[in-house]
Amino acid sequence: MSSPKNKNLKKVTMRDIAREAGVSVATVSYVINNNTNETISSSTKNKIMTIAREMNYIPDLVARSLVSGKSGLIGVFIVNDYSVDFPWKKCYYSEFINWLERMFAFEGYHILLSNIDIENPKLDIIFQRDLEGVFIVDVRKNLFYELSNKFNVPIIIVDSYIDDLIFHKIVPDFESAIQKGKDLLGNNELFLVMDKFNNREMNQKIQYCFGGDEADIHMVESIYEFEDFLKSHKGKKGIVLNEFLGTIVANFIDPPNIAVISTCGSSYIIPKRAKKVVFDVEKKAKTAVTIMMNYLNRKFAVDKYTIFKEKEFSLKA
Image (tube, rainbow, N blue to C red; front, side, top):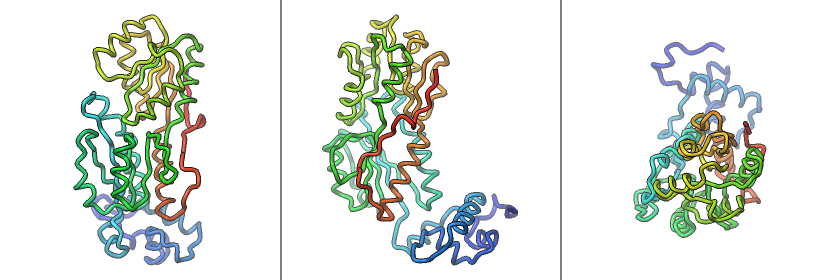
């Protein structure tokens, strides 16, 4: 396939794609805008979408919203507890959001990202935006319902256990991850270091999956207490939940004695001699986009939990 001249200087249009694909502009429009009223073969759809991707086509969301009456905006709300605002908190979901942005752009949507203070949520500006779908990440149950009651669009909960049959949840399979960590370390007496989630049920789930003595479980809320815990467990083996904490733990515990569960898409920062259990953040984002697109197209799921099971892991010793 030939590439358009000066593609970096000129905005690619549907007419450009139609010319490359050898189809009409109308056909390209039907495919790009996911018009289900028109019958177009799968081969033609795939050809058009491949060309659009190769030409770096960016949909004109303003024009599309005027025609369809839709905004093309997906809200992503990250809930933050600024009372425990550690540096790594700013990076925790950055890779996940980057993948969401890229994948939704291909579907013709833009991301509206908003950080919400868990203690002082200012929600008025959020509710003024015309969103087509919403992700709410790591949220307490009471705040979730305060948020969800304001929207009449698909809402997907990420990294939170909220037992509600209406809303779809995407959660990691921490049970498998922790067990893999135990297997790598020889299943001896272990300690667990974990970040504190806003969602209490998520914290309880992780601790339940780990088992063991409460004295060997540390949820990081203070850097000084964190260091004291590590000093008291020097010479022991342990599981660390998230790679940013893993780099700190490695300053106190010999890396071969720790298994780090990478949840943020930055497993490359884990010390080389440490054991690794890695969640694939790209697959997590892809799953989230697929589920949201299904709901936007009125394809509703019966099972409201999507759990990243063992096959979603890459395991390295």
